[in-house]
Length: 64
Image (cartoon, rainbow, N blue to C red; front, side):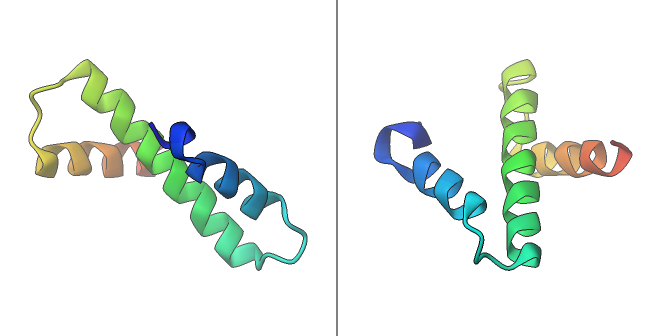
């Protein structure tokens, strides 16, 4: 999805830049990890509500 419109490439370029603040880089890396985790949960349970999906993703991020 994101790869088709260039956002993924822009993200990769952004995170690899030497001038990016480490806090911003860490935030973006965690955000991408959270999004990927939500996709995995959604694949396993396509009928899950958005609220429950977020709760499960948050729980899994904390327990990692």
